[in-house]
Length: 248
Image (cartoon, rainbow, N blue to C red):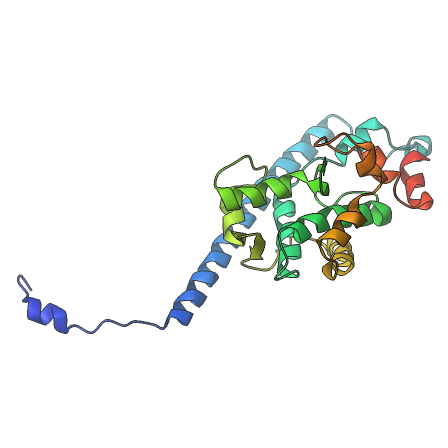
């Protein structure tokens, strides 16, 4: 049709779905985009791990350790490896906590990361995603998770987590960190979830002052203000049996 009158244009009926359906559609699209971004990041990480494994294989580093070597206690390098950040898993850990702590300020899901890491160290001898915890005035703070939460609230600031994935998974509403989807369980294993669930149950019913006091442990006290807390100091707050894993 070469020409059409205004009257005919104005008479065309256009579908207008209810706002609730529009919001549901938008939420599902966000969840799909978040999963796509997470899977892309996971594939890139798998490629990097495979390349590293190939290099170690050709270098002859994959032979079984001797009994004496296996019995050696962890070295200083082992402590450093505890803080090797896995950003993809870190986002899922933060989403997992935020999803299960609705109505709580962002202090709770971030504080859960520290408590869950201590539990994970005690039970499994490793951290959940290699977070670095910093001694801030209100207690230990997970640096990457805190920076990402603040970036959501204030725009592009320093963030160790990819912000496109963060924005598809979480949003800041004032002081609250709201999960837009549940965590990707393909990246967050059963052991990690167990430690997070323990920390969530521990922190859920505490008020701000109680949670702050609970996290002011000896590792935090020993660390200078705004400095990273040493893994050795965190490990020394664990039960003696758990410390033996690291110190022999």
